[in-house]
Length: 340
Image (tube, helix red, strand yellow):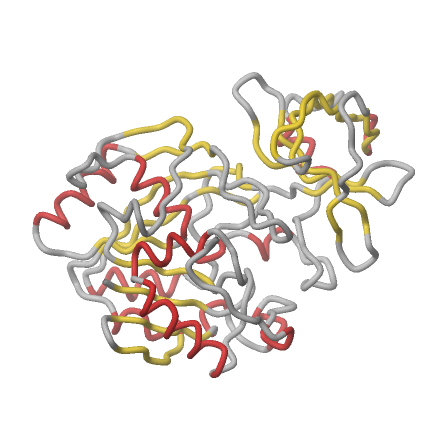
């Protein structure tokens, strides 16, 4: 059970990017929880809310067009994670017209024909009948990523009623394609805002974590994901902590990567591979002192991580204020800055 439960009114779901609402990417709202204070801002206020010695840790993973229709049916495959043996974790979903819904009747051995003479065959169940290990055949394409570039579309759920091009799902930091869903906490950053932050003395430290398909219906815990923390990032983070600066993760993916690379004392070491770390209030955080994140759904497992960073009381006050203040949820919504 998660640390926070609440009712999310449907009116607070962001149904389209802020650009479609007449805003710039950085024009979304920003709710700040800092100690006992909860305050309301615009995202463009961020440079004035941070200190010159703060470090923002950002995820450089790019979003894949990971949803592919199944030929001759109302089914779709969501490509989640490439495994070490070249197979993929996929989720089978049924098309409901506006978006997709879980398809619980998939079975091992089923072969799904895909556009371009491609196919995916379900080999073994991976998680509670939702994710499957699949062998993917993409004739004419060296990699599945190349195939997805041609035939895939961004993953979207029922609160986003129409498709948007993949560019709307990329962040300004995206360098390496690999995430099934956008590391959305970084979406409001623009080149201009990054310049303002750097001019103020805020540092940026990149990490990489390829996020898999979320579980909006079942709220499952995160499963293992590929990550990398470089020696340069480890050095920037460790020096900031030694000098009394704050290390603020941009998104839960950045928290997971950074905390995986840290030892029990909070010293960050270069690391790469797969992380199965789940950050909870009981485990706590060893490196990060703040988190910039979107607003998460009721009972979402990510709320445990937020509580580990900010504490349950502050998190509860932030979410009450967000609902009362009409903040918007999901990947195209508003942001929450939590500081310890």
